[in-house]
Amino acid sequence: MKNLALVFKALADESRLRIYNILLTSGELCVCDVEQTLQFTQTKVSRHLAYLKRAGLVKDRKQGLWMLYSGADLKNDEQRHLLQAIAEGLKADPVAQRDAKLLARNIKRGYCTTFAVLKPNHRVPAILEMD
Image 1 (cartoon, rainbow, N blue to C red):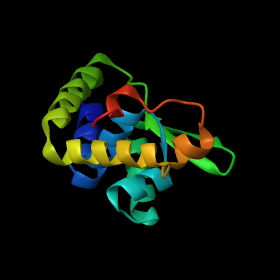
Image 2: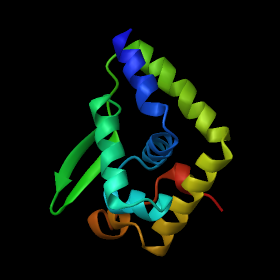
Image 3: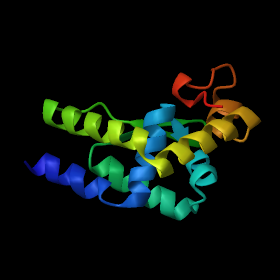
């Protein structure tokens, strides 16, 4: 029960929900990609990513100078079912859709550090290939 409460607390904030959404749609991003897409400050993004990480929703890895973030491997079926439902809800949310489209546009224009610098030979994730 405590794990579920922690997940609900982590996603109760709109900023964290927006960050989690673009991580789900992209697979992996650096802090500057999140900043650019959501127009948040580096401090705000880092603080919210740390909160999501403590809740077990996000994992990180270092590559060169960059810290890359992605959705964490979920620990149990309760979390998986809950987060699948949240992901489905986000697909229908206008703000979440707009964020995903903006991220896709940024990637295609080469603004995204993850795909322009760190992974230049990787294609844009299929879920981001929108108009």
